[in-house]
Length: 210
Length: 210
Length: 199
Image 1 (cartoon, rainbow over the protein chains, first blue to last red):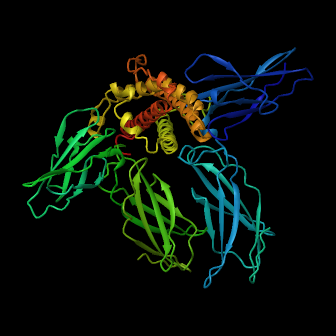
Image 2 (image 1 turned 30 degrees about the vertical axis):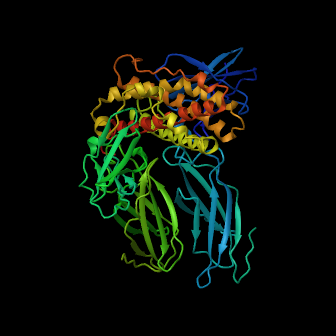
Image 3 (image 1 turned 90 degrees about the horizontal axis):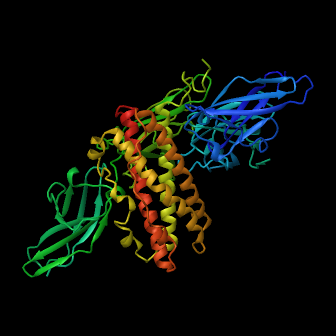
């Protein structure tokens, strides 16, 4: 019979829907069919995956109607072919704990040159479009990292819930790479890093924003 | 007869009691007496102000027993003297919307200097003593503002329901002024700003908290 | 025993977590209802004094709800939970019709339509959560007795536009008030039951 499949990841981008992915085991060359089954905490009933297509191969997508964050899901995947079938270990999902937002967007870098003081950099960004953060429904925290272009080590700065940050201590003449990512304030995981942004700190007056 | 009085303000400091103030009209020099009358939504009965003294002249204080939420008070003030009487325009009040707390207290500023990372500032504060946030009846949100001592513009940061905040992007060598105010979580208005707090960000290692 | 996502042994969402999520949701629903009410008032209510007809018009006014801190603290938590459940159930039907009937208002901005639909969805979601919480706390079957029937659909379909808009205004005014009560009572219960009155 086919080898036991493994549920590798479940993720919710905005606490409204979620998707799970699995990795098939070896199938000995036989055409193998995969069925995702789930039950909810305290209920006997077993349901089948509502949508195998939206999130691509070896995945199950739970839309708003099938997503509840009041309960823990017990999820298994069954592999079946003409030689028999095999079931994965159970994977327990609490939607609040698998929230991984998309990266922040609209990142802008602006060099400020106050008359009698050293220039400093102002970074601003916006939360990922999907997450409705205005009212505390999904509160995000941000962390930024930067390093000189030819540098090896990133410097990481946690900035809490702010969507703006002022950088004072930058080396004139250096070109910096900057990225930002975000995470829900309680449970859940960091988003991917945003796309890279570059800024050239001027030695003299001129500045070039790549 | 005396001129029509005007009800100028009603305020609840802790979402348990409230006070209304009125401004007398001209009384032509005649000794004039003021009576505050009110009725509540869905009731025919008219009541008189329970306490004209506690909140000072030209005011009416409604203690807990006389304060209801989610119901509209219809309030008028009648001026009477020997020449006749005159009644103010009705003033409609739902106490839910007139909560203006006192400012936060016990504000502390502490500079943290982690070994391999940049120093940052930790602010902590407490809700105004009158406000009972422990029971959950009143939930407060906070906003802080800061600016370099000689600076013009305040930078304002909304921090939600936390009573602690970490500031990362501060200009080394600068002396900052910081204030905090608070508001009920949905309706009502911001308190006055708290008293000013100062902190000197060190260029080198030493720090002085004014 | 299998490892549960948040380390809990018997694989269920803790009561504390259920209350956290319920409070976050009730806060969000009231925030949405404030935005919807204010936007509707700005768009359709200016100078029409709809408030005078809205006062004392709520279909849930038959439910006796605490009106100050003392009353709210004296009521037994099971009764207050049942009351919240009853209010949510009483709003299930009107919110479904609000979300559909509002689509027929002339030039209703998208933001009003979207919020009406989202409020209906989130209210249903909060009802699901409250039934779970009550099920956990109540030993017996979840009581179904508290409910207030809504008869307002015909008034949302009147031909006379002013009367119809006034009916919408009253419904939004009532939901705005009731969603604030629900949010307030839930925050109170969470502090009482989960944080022993020490929030």
